[in-house]
Image 1 (cartoon, protein in one colour):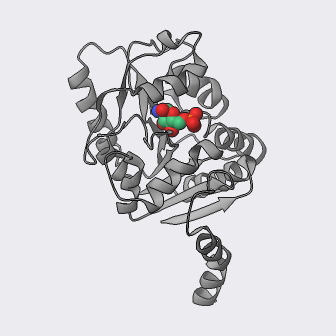
Image 2 (cartoon, rainbow, N blue to C red; image 1 turned 60 degrees about the vertical axis):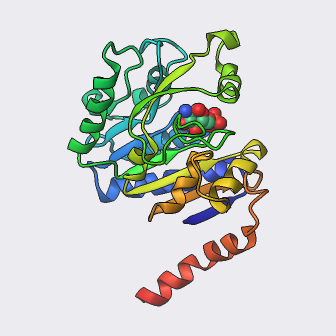
Length: 263
Ligand code: GLP
């Protein structure tokens, strides 16, 4: 795992956007795995800026979102579908047919989950998966006790997640109890993962996931088994990492190694 510690939210957004932009430039038909939540908003803003000012081209990009609330229609302002169009898709040139977001109101949910998995597979698999992290250490909506080999399915949200996400709803009772989510196993098949975290409320889940045991109680800890993960956190979210100094040292020496090897 590569752990990059930046000073603040703006810096993590810029760092992550550089990774995404390089990926798209080197493979224009990149399959992106996308996340919702407040954390990737700065990354999306930066990618929009690169699209407008520097011509970053999304015309061949294919996207798969991680999750969606069950029971919210696509145009519901709190749905992840609405979030993605409003904050990103409407502002870049990704074709509508290339966008995939789980459908929270599908009738045959089990079949739908299997279809979503097939769509990912048939597109060649996810090249780059963007992740946030919940306060209980979840990725997507893989709440504690999620199998680390789980696939796309319906999950019941924890009280903690419902409370955290209630900030987007009028009343806590409006927050859906269930979500359709890619599984941990689905996410782990992405060729590269970037996990973003900002703020002190993410310090504990980040430390648990990076330096703690691999456990279904923190589904993000599964990334320790992934061969190509970059974790980009700000100073506050890195507060509880024991080996912080070493990670900074590695980052500082990164270019030295590359320059020595290739020049
Ligand atoms: C939700 C999403 C996750 C996201 C998490 C954290 O639970 N399903 O994908 O990582 O929220 O969100 P935030 O970035 O707002 O803290």
